[in-house]
Structure formats: structure tokens, C-alpha cells
Amino acid sequence: MSDLNPREPGVMFWAERDTLDSIAALGVRCGQLGFGPAYPLTAETATRWRADLDRLGFTLVTLFAAYAGESYSSIPAVAQTVGFVPPETRIERIGRTLALSDFAARLGVPSIACHSGCVPEEHRDPRYAATLEAVREVADRCARHGQTFALETGQEPAAALLEFLDQAARPNLGVNFDPANMILYGAGQPLAALRLLTPRLLSVHLKDGLWPPSAPPGALGSEVALGEGAVNIPVFAATLAHIGFTGPLNVERETDDESVRRRDIARGIALLRGLTMPRAPEPLA
Ligand code: MG
Image (tube, rainbow, N blue to C red; front, side, top):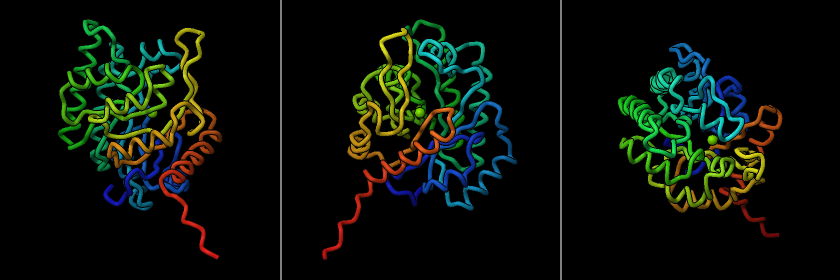
């Protein structure tokens, strides 16, 4: 990743939905790659991805895990089904994440990430300690591979996540900061959250969104194209520069409509290029 520029635009993309050629065709040379639960994390698929990365001169900074049985339909559904919080799927999901760490090691990718689940508000909730243990186990496997482990932000207030990270007490554990999630889940102002989580910042998503509606209760806000939501992307990007963050700005767009997704990712990249690469002045006549 040494040849990347600070805060170079990248893309968050998925092994089941995208080819590396289609992402590189957007004009980026870095990003984060997610794997759904059924994707085979084998030596063969690792060899294939590695060959594509080398052929295209593409750098992956993070591999993401997503799990079977997760629902993002409402805030309560997320709290019940996502990450390491639900006990009935915890062991299987820990296993999948350990496998992703091993897979990232084969690919030479320095970080893995996931939604670890909404940190339970009540620390005496047995799911709190169990989620903490799950995160430690994954972080320790990552440490053996020289990797960091990033938890996706936004499903709880930043202060609760920070306390959880402190209690986990693993030096290679941090966050993948997603400013839109803070808004979609009504979890707090993203810029204040970013400042609080700066010491733990490993990677970022550039995603935008609108605050949840007042009804029905528990409804999520709506994700929108970059620059069209409540994040204030120019200020967010400037703040990342100000705090000294140098990793890629990974554009993320989560919609099932493939044409909207590709259009908005392309526009998001253009928006970021406009922010970070000012146009040369017009030549004098
Ligand atoms: Mg995200």
C-alpha cells in the first residue's frame, strides 16, 4: 500500500457481486473487499484474487466478513441478528472470521473487519462479555498474522464503542469508521464520533445517509448517494486530513439496485477527486 497517495479514493466492494476488473475500471487502484457467508475462502480462490490484484496493480487494505442470518431491516432487527451478539450463531461466525483472517494472510491483506454487532447497553447482559471474548479471539488470530481487526462503527454511540474497545484491550483492535451509519442508526453526530474514535481509527467508509424518520419506531434512516445526505462529505474528508488519516477513502453504496449502485459509486469517486485533487488553473491567454 506504500504507493498509494494519502486519502486516495477507493471502493468497498463484494466478491459475489463484483469482479476486480469492474472495480478497477472505475479508475481506482485500492479498496476493501467483502465476502458473503457462502463464499469459499480456499487456497484456490486466494490464488485467483492474488493474481488479479497483481495483474491490475490493485491494493486491498481490508477484507470484510458478512454472516448468514443477519437482518438490516430495522434497528431492533440489527441488534438481534448482527455480528457476535446473538448467541445461537456466535461460534459459527467466530469461525468464519478466523478463516477470513487466515485468508487475508494468504492474500497479504493487512486488516480484516466486520460488524461485530450492537454493543449491548447493559454490561451485565451476558451477551456483552461473550461479544467481548469473541472480538478478543479474532483480534488475537489477526495479531498472529500481523493484521489489525476493525469493527464497523455506527450501530451504537461512539462512547459505548470506545469503552467496549478499551475493555477488549487488544492493541491491534480498532474501527472502520462509517459516518453514514452513525446517522442511519441515529447513533450520534459523525464528526464528533470521529474525533472520539480517532485513536482507534484504522480505515473508513465514505457513505452518506439521512437521519431516521420519527415513525415507525426503530426505523433506520435512508442511505443516499455520497454528497446527498447529512454527513457533509467535504467536511468529513477535510477532518480526516486534519487528524492525519492517510488510508484510502473507500466509497460504499449499499443498495440492491445494481445500476444505481455502480452509478453512485462512480459519482462518489468523482466527488472525492474534486475534493482532493483541485483542478489545475486555466492557462493564461
Ligand atoms: Mg460501512
